[in-house]
Amino acid sequence: MKEVSFIIHKPIICLLIDSLMDAPLQEEIQAGRAPTLQFLRDNGTYYPRVVSPFPTMSVSIDSSMLTGKPPNQHGIYGLTYYHQKQKRVYNFGTGPKEIFLFGVKRVLRAGMLELNQKLLHKDVKTLHEETDEPTASINAMIYRGKNHTKLRAPWIAWLTGLLPRKIEASVPTYFSYGSMHTIDKRSHPKNMLTQFGVNDHFSSMEIISLIKQDKLPRLSLVYFPGNDIIVHKKGTSEGKGIKKTDDVLSPILDAFGSWEEAIQKCNFVVLGDSGQTNMVKTDTYIDLRKILHPYAIMPLSRDTPQPEDQLITCVNERMSYIYILDEQISYQDVVRLCKVEKKLDVIAWQEEDGWIHVVSGQTDGALSFRANGEYHDEFDQKWQLEGDISILDLTLDEQTIQYGMYPDALSRLSGALDPKSRSVIVTVSPGYELVGQGSPKHKGASHGSLHHLDSLVPMIVTGIQQPPENLRIIDLKKWFLGLLEE
Image 1 (tube, one colour):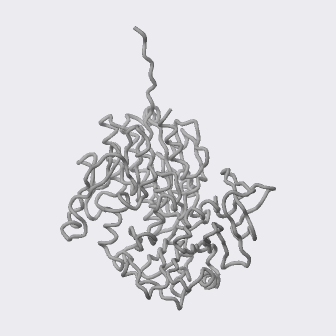
Image 2 (cartoon, rainbow, N blue to C red):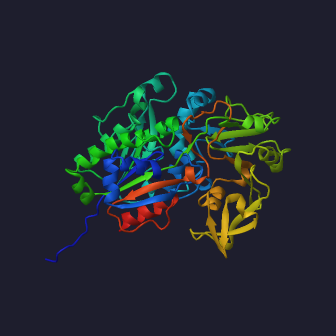
Image 3 (cartoon, rainbow, N blue to C red):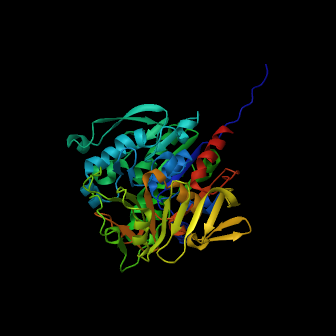
């Protein structure tokens, strides 16, 4: 009888740690407070500068990671944005006061009933949808897969009429989203005080249950949200979030029998999603309502504009979309007001001819660019450039574009703009945060912008020799699919 040979592929566990940054991670490792992450780093390859998608907000980052597309192709532009086709503002939970003013029911229903089911464009496939291999998603906001199931809304949400009791969803082979859908009923905590299971300890218990039951699929994406909360409150030098995350990672490796066995039996990818920027102590918050006075901005209490509304602002911490509703208002009218504020470092918009224009409140001059020109960048993207390239801190080495303080700026800006929406993007300098009606005011640190402090994250990879083609989160889908097809 002819012998049949086969290859047993190691499963991949991707540990997504919200707001994990290189310098704080290295500091915690050096101090001996992150032994699990140190073990994985020392037994793998460390990439300190992976570029996050823009806006640097978790829901749009995750959407780009899972689809390999920018916001104007997958449809999720940030934690809050205006949907041009539906003529409606969406908010997935920017902050307690803003959620209350906008409407708790609207926020919950957008996130639970529409985000994966309707708003993430159907003509793009997620990583879970594109592979024929089994995959797992644990506590990730973006999870769309090929298996139909029903989520159970938290008891308080359906008792108060905020959500239906059961929610239709398409999910991966193994799927966990807090108390709403669990892999192992014994996983905890999952009560109201612990975000109904959307917490680090619950994520750890769910992936451990797959390990111990010998049910690990080829790829598992496991999300750990805790570090982000601490950094927002205390700033980037506060390492408690990393230590706490490390504490729940060590049992995952223990579940294999030993840490050495863990990296022999499984390949690990540890990844941050965005960086954060420390806030200054005075004049921290830049109020767009004052900048855009006297135009009528749609109040936060409505999600659909009325005839008297001239502008809509959708603030995503250190960046914001400004949507122009009134046809009598030009891009230049809005840009002129924005340029007065010196803390606005990037002001960008796209005309119908495809050209993207960028100015700044910090300097004179303007840069215009669009795709498919004579210049190319490190990611093999080609661009036409006209005007002052220093606006985006670009330099040229003959025909090669080199990025400075705004990594992959041209692609990331163009991916967040849609000329049909008549929108202007503004971002604010390091140390400051944009606010509108009800916006959160973070005391420690914040993110959302194009700046490298918000945009560069570390990645640890064990057991995988082939690195991604480009060190960008948007390119990881292609990398993972290649690994799954080997």
